[in-house]
Image 1 (tube, rainbow, N blue to C red):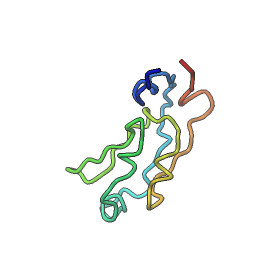
Image 2: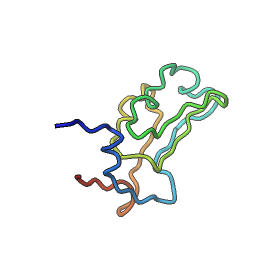
Image 3: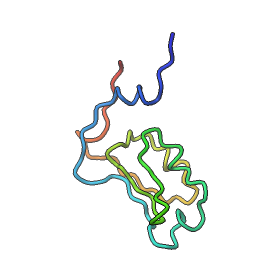
Image 4: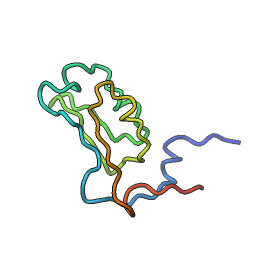
Length: 99
């Protein structure tokens, strides 16, 4: 049996986009932990849906909330508890299905 890639498995998801983000980077100032104290940026590397991207030119994390699969990995790996996730209201967000 052939193993599916993460990308192929993510293709099995339905998602109803909500008009507002459900993910907030708490501190986005020039002194934010993402900028000053977090060289590895684990949220960027651990997220299977590629929600987070480090933009070095502007020294900030970009958030593509509409990609979120609501797994919570970002909150677990952020060493500074700088990510807040409030799941989208009922009827919005990810809907898991099996292929």
